[in-house]
Image (cartoon, rainbow, N blue to C red; front, side, top):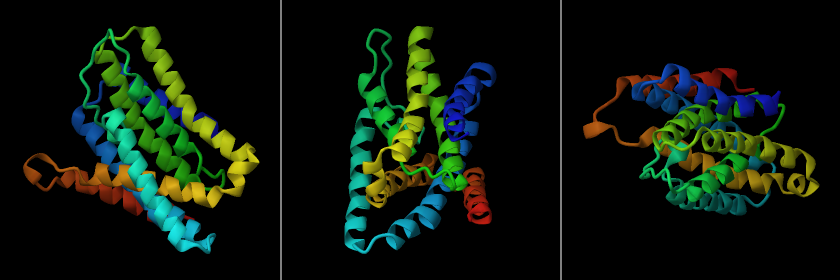
Length: 226
């Protein structure tokens, strides 16, 4: 079921673009909700867990900071796609390889900390991937790539998180360093979720709808977290 949900999250985002053509407001609110959900799960579950299972708290803190820095580097290549904005000039004659590779690396890393018993983290990643898939699909279609390229891009992207989950579950080396890897991924999640939440709105005005989406994400996590 975990593999299916991770793949379906990308498929749902793509189908929303093809069938419903969601507005920018809808995508923005979905991003805010997903960012709040992801941040809440990270703070309330992942952070306490890594510190509980590690005696070297300084090492954990350093790895979290490294995760933040690495994600900021990846975003320089993906042009912000991880948090819902692709600042890239489309050119149908030039495939965006840097965007593709950085997004795949990010999606792969998202699958590593997933625990089959932790449904909150799984759902946070699934909800996070839907608006990303919407933005990505919209970009690819506007860039006028062929349907074969768009389908191939989205298919490979959808398989990256399941691949990360599969490797974490079946490679013993990953299991031995699970806490260390999770600390790094926490940094990635913190960077992405905080950017989603704290990106300035137009003229720095208070956005009530965005605030309610964020509040809903936080409250829902608190109510459902085990």
